[in-house]
Length: 527
Ligand code: 3NM
Image (cartoon, rainbow, N blue to C red; front, side):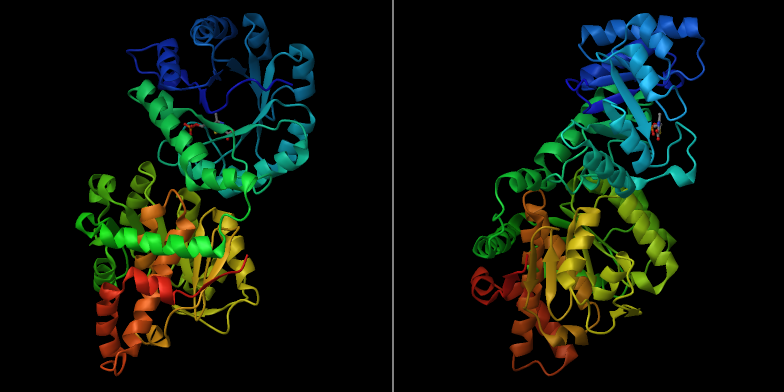
């Protein structure tokens, strides 16, 4: 078995995408200079002789740069030019025959679309897997039933890892992967065991082959991959999991929450821009919440301006409360751009259980975009988990909630590889490994409309400060800060009911100080 090759950025060629001014060999050369680590020559319609000539010209480039060249499907062509290996699909020559013909010194990769195929390929001695199809793609005809999304890809990856045992199991994913979604794909496909292992890389065709500058495209992709595999909080979490299990000790987290709160407050001369696309009931209250807590709200909903806004934004809050087609377009555009800058997204799936439309829409969001935080009440979390344990009526969660709330938030967090905040009389905040409960808050919050949405704003305002270090702490700071402000407001003698509470609530959000957080925060580590 060969394992000394680098799958980080895997280019699959398509000569039909090459512009008239360039040759395929030039494109491959530029792509390698930008950071491609392995190349697969894929020619579905080229005659054998032309294929061999083309393969030789590409091989000159790959050899010079010390990058392996694999041939798609055609073992005869691979043998003829002494390529580094082949990539075969399920309908191509069987793996054992290919291995007999090529021997043990050549790389053989196999396309797999299911756990069963992955298990067979691993048992059969494949050197790596190409797991597909991640997203829809214009490059290859893929039936809708073969689209897996990152969560589906992860299930296959996990099955491969479970089968491999001591064998070095390696894989990339393919299909619609590009600079916008590379980080999300690599995050969300992380297996649970061992130690939330990530895929070895991503395979792309059009993201490089159809780019006007393949060098630049490869460079940006490498930057995103590096972020996902080395610099992001999930990469850090993976490293920590290996070394230390008590990183989220309660005392450490308490201090970290105070620190994040202080950091957001003292930087108010350089307030972080918190972009909201939210519902029409709470827009004004959310903007005021953000401002009072130390952020700078921006409530731009049109899809047309998201590209311009994205570089300056520190966090994006998406709240589907009063969703319509225009807002939906704006939300998708904003999330797409946010991904390019690795800007944290806080998703509030308001009343997701109320209609099929909302459910489909949110599941589409979670398939296509990586969110840092999902915030919802028990009914919304239940709907996302596809359980009827907690029912909803309209925007409200009914009954006493989950029998095991920790298990619920952990399950959702592990499913989407994000922080989950579940609001209620007691709030729960989890990163899938560690879960905290928050016992601050006041029943008056339930007497004004939009108090749940304000928690979303608060979480976005604080999580941005530590989104790539420790978003669990940022989310906790957001939940604690707003709940403590509610307690302070409700205690005031001038508060007589919802109207005066609402006014006092904003005052107290503005007045709350790090010392208050330190002395009045009520959090408990539950797992
Ligand atoms: N194989 P793009 S999808 C060559 O699912 C290929 O196995 C796939 O192209 C699979 O990066 C695909 O342009 C095309 O979306 C991927």
